[in-house]
Length: 96
Image (cartoon, rainbow, N blue to C red; front, side):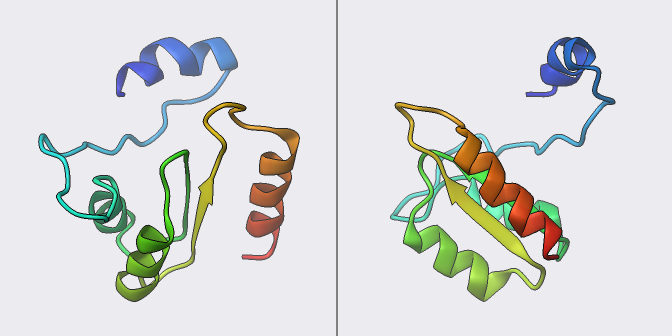
């Protein structure tokens, strides 16, 4: 993922962005394997997580374990990000 700062960011005119280091093994059980790592990485700061695998289990866990604001936004894997998704995220950010 760190390659995105070398390849994608310059093509889009973005500065280098923070990168989450993912664990080597997946989470067992209904909790998504990214959830704990994202909450630890955010360290109480507000964050938006956009993914096609987010469930209510992840939302409940983040709500119970993260002391900052968090938007867990699930996208349809068949469609990707849509204008509606961007509007939801922009609205959430505007109300922080």
